Length: 232
Image (cartoon, rainbow, N blue to C red; front, top):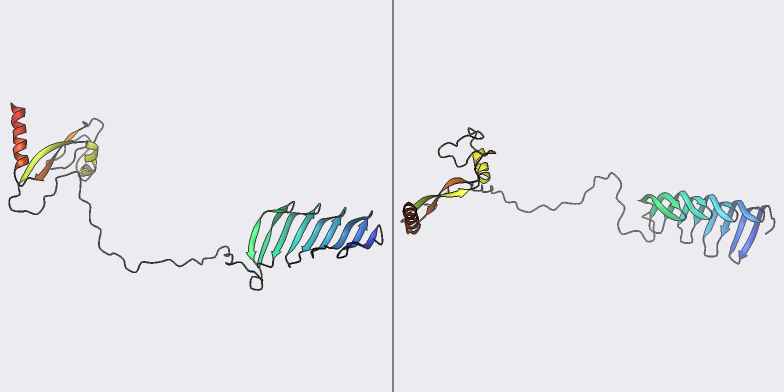
């Protein structure tokens, strides 16, 4: 070191030295430091540490430009990842990037660019959407209405129908009752109406008539025997 105060140069090794301002035998003010690993720092110093505005250029070409405190990146800054073609701009705390944004920068000239570019904010470009080669244009088949009379199959020789009653919850009949716009809550349904009005005083069960095919008459005979037993 040539001077303890003012401008001077000091060597710390064969390839590591500082040239710049000094104060009290310490690097303070503006100065440039050449490190043995090939990195170079140029900027403000305080008490032998980078402090203030400065730039660190690494051996591979990447560099940081921004604020320094106590020899570490602290505050706003930009880091140029020239080897990958990207630029990060954000905020650092003790050499750790806490928040910021990354964009492509010099991607075409980068020796090792990333595999995919970073999409731009607000870009309307979208990936292609696969479309089916053929579409089924047949109209959907309607679901059979329920509750209500069962639809008989096409007439066949020897087919007979048996009419009997079952007990069903009025809540399941409410959907069919809604189709009858003339019915009112608490009223008696019209003749032939498949549903019953639903109200707070509605009984828990209701009758529903259903037709079932009985080709051999077995069900009809069984119902007749059941009715005869009830009468006896």
